[in-house]
Image (cartoon, rainbow, N blue to C red; front, side, top):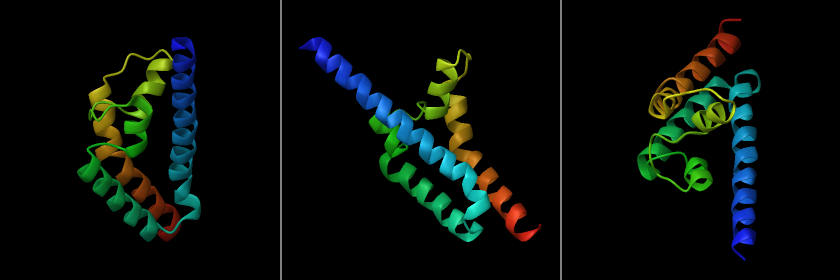
Length: 112
């Protein structure tokens, strides 16, 4: 029974991993297919999510943790063998990445 529950937990984490990866790929590719004004709204919604839930909803579900230091990026980089500071990665993802994506979208869509 415990082995079954352990396997179920791994399946759940694998599901959230692939959902997370798919959404992140959509977000990074959005600069090419989504209007920068809508991206700006999504950036604001992302910060609202952080304010309300304390972390990304998928991160909370995937890692069963509300700690701000947890992030999909840090988890993936560690699995790939990189020694990373989880808190630094989480801060970068929360406070730099959304603005990079918005900036790239503006450059691609307005200044091209």
